[in-house]
Image 1: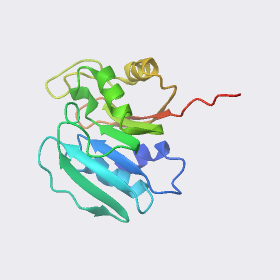
Image 2 (image 1 turned 180 degrees about the vertical axis):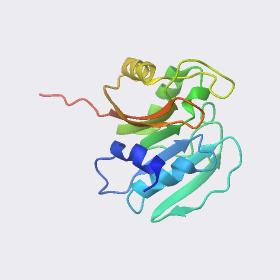
Image 3 (image 1 turned 30 degrees about the horizontal axis):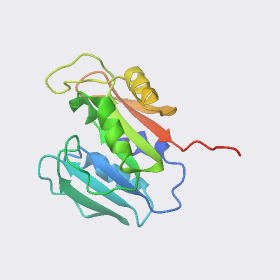
Image 4 (image 1 turned 135 degrees about the vertical axis):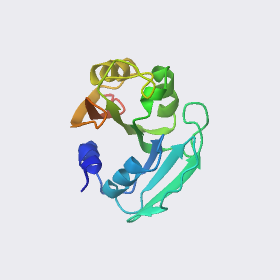
Length: 176
């Protein structure tokens, strides 16, 4: 298991049934492939990026479907998602709250956001709208998510650290 796969594996508790995920801002597929290694056979990952990418169509028994689109402004290629992966992508979005609301409409009532980001607050040309873990937690809590877990971190080759976070939403259980 590579470094990136081990960083995100804690986000998955039930891998008994195939799942549908979107990897937004997939780039060359580093995290698309890591996600594919973790999901059960029969799952699908919709890899989305603004630039054309050539990705493998399968990772083991997991189908990878690439779509060229801007995940912030364009519709996603699928709904009824079990999860959304944003690896080094949400720092390009200024209005993160609107994005979370938009993306949640593409998800099942119980779903997961899996975030991989630089743990920093100082912007630079490559990370224009940074979001450290504390800010991310506050952002998702305001959006109604309460199961936010820091999965781990790794040193970044560009300095500082990169963290992974799992944000789970489950519908409220009402008693009669």
